[in-house]
Length: 461
Ligand SMILES: Nc1ncnc2c1ncn2[C@@H]1O[C@H](COP(=O)(O)OP(=O)(O)OP(=O)(O)O)[C@@H](O)[C@H]1O
Ligand SMILES: [Mg+2]
Image (cartoon, rainbow, N blue to C red):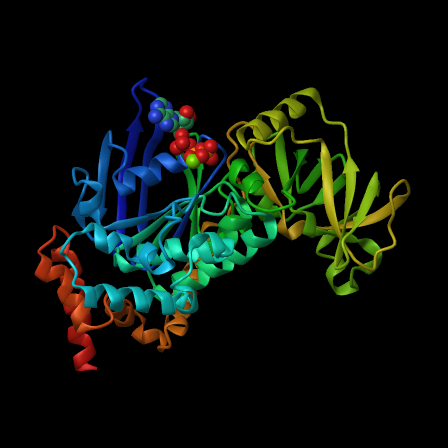
């Protein structure tokens, strides 16, 4: 296991195009980091730079504090899990998992190979399938075999490039939770690329949102959702997307197509000097005014609108309100949509209503809006004027604590033990710890070091 540090990484391809532009990220030991963004934003390039398949034009890449820019992929001791698992159809599951060990000819005794494969298979619940061929396995089981390969290598980190994008929606959901649990059980540092915001939100300890080669924001899913740094992150994260409404600011009032919205003087002050702002409203900030408790009503504004239609989903419903924006606002929304890789941002507001609401399309209805939660964006720069950085940081801090606890639980230790259990799990026993050291490979130094420290603590404890 290892920490990975990206310092001002730049990748320029032959034509001088900066596919990755000055990206810095500190990935902690055992952390699950997601790189997310629309097609072409540089996710795969960044991952390939980490693993060593792509040269680094500028900046430094450190693994456990050591600069590895010039090291070959195999010297970095990272395991890449690809989208098509590239299993060998003629080999059994056992031999597929053992493959990387066989490749390092003579490095591992038959006994060591058997031990590593058996352990990995048991972690992955593949023990009963070891003698079968990949063709006879389910998609999920095949994915696990591919992970088994990464596990026996005792890699310092796992790197995934859209591993689930070939699967159907149901299997994707299933595999998502398998990968998540596996990552916790192994406590292995992981970097995972996806363009799917749901995958990003459900898997990541922290999510790095990229746009055109630049890092927009890196934070826990919750911080991204509640305190997005700009229009792009606000629009990209969350489904259905945040609604953006043009508004003029007059004192403590926002004049919008929905009517006047009262905001606090503090919020209004953040928009001081701006005549027009974009108001960001998540669908769930709305409710059928009839169903809002009196105690809550005062925290928002009520307005009348005619919904075009509603969609009933069982636990809630979506309602749609269309509006006719000024041409310059329409242009702005279209640009934003292009950035996000969407067709267009329709001048439409999506509201979530309680499942019990009787509001239906075509009729006027009273809708309530929780104005406490609005964000105001600068339409020119996209900056979130009302972002509360401290509240956001607290959310990410919370997520960090949860991670330590989850890893500890998954590994059957108390949270205080998680550090040493993670180090220890790099190689469960003294035998396997000997393997890389006696072989004298390039990575033996770091792997041996981590194990020695873990082992020392174990005997002490
Ligand atoms: N070998 C290459 N030569 C030149 N330009 C490249 C090369 N590979 C990628 N690029 C460019 O670098 C940018 C980033 O590409 P990258 O593959 O990293 O994007 P991505 O975020 O992984 O996209 P996707 O979601 O479509 O996989 C793109 O604009 C792409 O055209
Ligand atoms: Mg890609």
